[in-house]
Image (cartoon, rainbow, N blue to C red):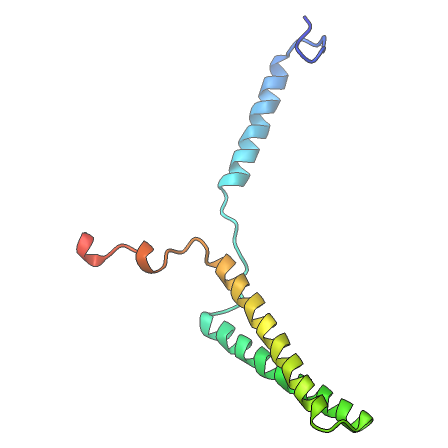
Length: 119
């Protein structure tokens, strides 16, 4: 018998059993919750973000001061380094907060949570 794809093979009972086993494995993988690695408590992540911001600004200031010493462009190198460090720190904080949002996407917040009065 020729099927729609042009195959001449007849289905065997072993094929259906094999398909059933593969579907069972796929369902188990899908139903198993994926554990996300937690970087620590929320307080720890807040300390991490604030530390990264401060370190970025300090590194930017250091680079700006180095540029001032080498090229003799006193306050401009420090100002440029300050702006660059602040921008880098803000970018890092935004990336970290986006990662935190992605980890906590399934947790209801604010209006999504049921009120005690509704019970």
